[in-house]
Image 1: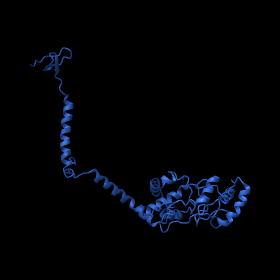
Image 2 (image 1 turned 60 degrees about the vertical axis):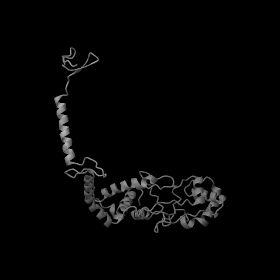
Image 3 (image 1 turned 90 degrees about the vertical axis):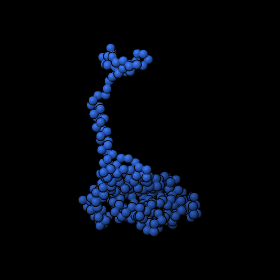
Image 4 (image 1 turned 30 degrees about the vertical axis):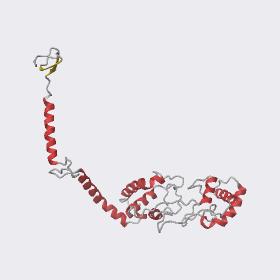
Amino acid sequence: MTEKHVDSVTGVETTGHVWDGDLRELNKPLPRWWLYVLYACIVWSIGYWVFYPAWPVVNGDYTKGMFDYSQRGEVSKEVAAAKAAQSKYFEQIAATPVGEITKNEELLPFVMAGGAAVFGDRCGPCHGKGGGGAVGYPNLNDDDWLWGGTPEAIQQTITHGIRSGDPEARDMAMPRFGLDGVLKPAEIADTAQYVLSLSGHSTDAAAAERGKTIFADNCVACHGEEGKGNQDMGAPNLTDGIWLYGGKLADIEKTIETGRGGVMPYWTGRLDPVTIKMLAAYVHSLGGGQ
């Protein structure tokens, strides 16, 4: 049974629907503005279905719509336009020797931005975001280079790597004086003291004096008589207090014993030549380039 009347509390007419004898439903229709918005959304959605991609279909595809529009297509167009805009810079970089790139004011901002992005992706995990390095990974800011810090030398290192297996890799290695039985533990300890003395950090003068002779017999050929190294052979300067694997006595003894022999990957074939040039120029700009 239904019976319409005006609710005494709200003053709103009821629909006539009654539950449990005294629960009545107020007749409060949706606001007109809300209904108009709903109707407009329905019309808009129908139009969207007609003109734009909207519905998946059985074969894994989707309805294309009358405009044949897709966000993937728009992104592809934007990427193509960006590449076209950058092509002139890539052509100039390809034609410019790496040592001249940093002198080109027009190219430099583009090269630095591109080099920084590649460095963050490919080099940062080992050398650190700012190139500060870590134990076993060279600091690229300190002007202490095993194989040379000119743009050309850096390009060569990036391209072919170090002991990487590439035919043109920088491949000199320090002998494993301890592992291969060339030197006895006591001789290694004396040599380490002498090596520390070259930078003024030896703690045992007598051991350093004994190590001097051992150094002359086994190490001078690569590191030089004064221990200042040889970049052609990747032999570090032992006089500057900069250590790749640590400068404590135990660290140096370990280096003499095992030879270390760190590896840097080659990037030829993984990065195109233009990208390698940008990366070399960026590394050179970090502050340690020669």
